[in-house]
Each structure stands twice: as structure tokens, then as C-alpha cells.
Image 1 (cartoon, one colour):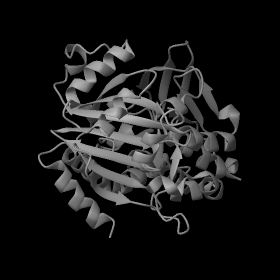
Image 2 (cartoon, helix red, strand yellow):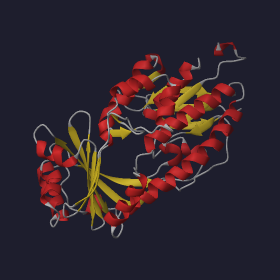
Image 3 (cartoon, one colour):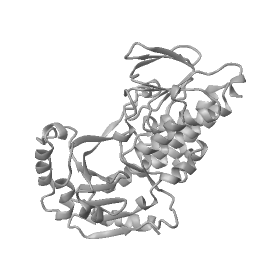
Image 4 (cartoon, helix red, strand yellow):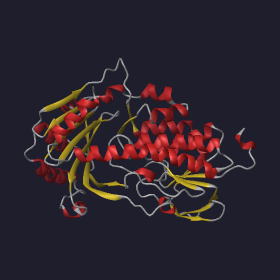
Length: 383
């Protein structure tokens, strides 16, 4: 058993998203204890994202390491790989239909369901909700003292930042901060039970429409709702200066429609038919290829390490990071410095390439002649 080592290492994971949960689970499978500290008072993963495409070479490999590949495949939506691309006039340029009889490499699953699989397999005692990290202080021999807003403190041998774009652990390793990309996004939601015509227009997976340095996207989730995203090139202050009444959804929709007044009616229906909250957020990125000098007792996974614009790789990289780090800790349990260095060296190699691709592809979608460029790119990818 792992606990017959010279000493038991105290490992803390900051953040209970897919990466943090995966790391704790794979460590658990290897007989290694860890504690997840999550700032929210309960699991909110279902509210923090839509449908995720899980890649064979990263996310699915991590699920296999965690012993969850078979349960994942039982609930994954292979038809969710459908994808349609329209221009602003509603002309269809790409219509990729998944063959569900020959499962592809990137089936979809809702974030909440994925995290539910991980949580159900985890020892419930390893995750603590309602623990917002205030600061992490380096001590000696790689140890860190963690201080939380509820007064709790912990001294650990390894602290892993799985706490996203604005990580509180990252400053221990680098001065790099998340930077605004120049693109903002508005999120809406549509109930397809009330709007079956949009479900038919959208496809069983994702729809993208591009033009005028803007986009309207629709992603069908497993609960029957379409998650809608409106993306714009905008100044950083756009959310505050646009005059859009985000706290009044019906008024906000009227105002947002003016940004797409000459777009095809079915595309504008993605705004008209939305119900519930209308929320706005900025899209951030870390410097592509970010590296730091390895330090004892601390490292990063997921967006905390290599944040890039959303282009399908984020959760997959977080889960791969988790698997790589867990296996490295298992191999070098009594030498955590070596475990960290080995993991980081490997992580830099695969994450920098993916981050560059995500950034370039995301920017391409809001570029001049975006439809033509993205059509060419997708035709090559779908061959």
C-alpha cells in the first residue's frame, strides 16, 4: 500500500472543477490521499458550463486512468458531434452529421454529468465545500500554509492550483496574469421543448454562424436546452458601457438584436427565443507557452496553468494534466520535487501547442471572411 512509504504526503487541491476532481480521483485509485478545497458551498459544476466534447487522446485517457471510461461511454452523446456552420445570411456551409453507429473520437457530455461521475467515485470526505482560499504562504522544505476565509488553515507538502483563470496559487510560480483577448461573450439559454424549430435548425450538436467580426453559436445540451453564445470584438469596458440592461433579460434581448439586425431570421431567433438570465463575460488568455521555474511543493493544472480561449480543449487539457500529475506523484511519492518537475516538463510540451491552436482558431472565427476561413479549416479537419 502507498501508505507504507516513509511518510504520508499531505496534498491539497484548490478547486473542485473537472481537473481538481480528476486529480483527486486518480490519486485515490493509487492509494494516495488528497483534499479538495472548493470555494462554493456545494457542487455548482452543472451551472458553470454546457456540453463538453471529450477527446480520445486526453480527456478519455484520463477517464480510463480513473476507471470511468466505460461509465462515460454509457452516458456520452455521440450524436452531439454534429456540427453546422452558417454565414450571417443563414446559408449553410458545413453540415457534419455524426455516424452514431461508428462512435467518433469526441463524444459530448454535459459538464454536470461528467463531474457527477467523478464525484460519485470519490471518497466524499476528500472534498470540502465553502473553503475560499485567501492566501498560500511558502514555509520550508516545500511546505505551504493555506489560509481560508472561514478561518481554517492547513499546512501541506503539495498544493495544486486547479482554480482557473484567476488562480490564487499561480502567483507563487509566475507573475503572468490572465489578459483580455479583446472579445466578449453574452450567454443565453433556449428550451427546445418550446422551440422545436430551433432544435431542427441547430442540429444534434453545435451550430456556428459567423460574420461582421461577430458570431452566434448554439450548443445542444443533454437536458434539451441550447446554450447560446453571442461573441463580439469589444473594448474591455464594453460590458459596463454598452448600455445593455443585463439585469432585465427581455430588454437586453431587444438591445442585443440591434447588433444582428441584418442577420437571417432563424439566427436572430437564438436571441428572441431565449429565456432566463442574460449574462456577459470577457474572454481571457494566459501568454501562449507560459512556463515558470519549478518550485518545491506547488504546481498548477488546467486553466490555472495554460488558460486559452474556449475552443474545445480546456477541460480535456485539465483532465490530462490531472492524470499526468497523479501518475508522476505516484512514481515519485517520496520525492515530490521530482514529481512536479517531471509533470511540468511534459505538460509544457502538449499544452503550449494546444493553447496556440485554441487561440488561433477562436480569433479566426471573428476575423475578416471568417466563414470562408473556418470552412476551409473544417473541411481539412473532417477529411
